[in-house]
Image (cartoon, rainbow, N blue to C red):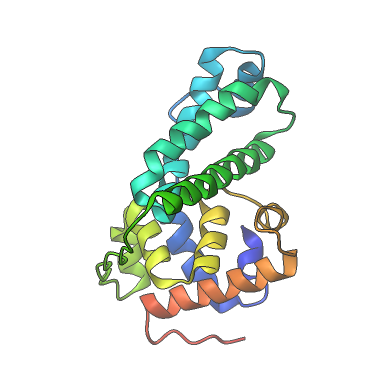
Length: 210
């Protein structure tokens, strides 16, 4: 995500905080592109590798957007993937965009269903203060889920969506723009403002130099 800081080098440290804390690693020795191709042929072992690669990030994204529905939506998302993957055509980056698009659609569907069933208004549950004071503290102490929570608690909905899709989905600006029905410049500006806000929350003395 090098373009995060192209317009403001002083924001660079916060990209390290967010991306490093949300970092993932594959648990398989099989190259991902090979596993993806295998999954497209209907090989269960290939689909298993794909699942293990993306499930942690998918769950973090869904738990940040709708905690009570996250596990169910993740299951529905992977069921859709299993049913449609033979028709999928693309590389790992395209798969990430496809997967998170399905998840976003399932999330919207679930919210509509829940909204129709709800009979009483429910207040949002107060979120705990992260207590983070410096970028070094964040780098050393934030777990992946804590980093996601920090993003959600300190940004507005659109800003959080952009950062989560960029960091967890590893999606390009263009892919995020398409998913959110916005133009690329809007995503770039929203991302820049979000990262500046996160930097200021982590370090109150943070000053943008450009």
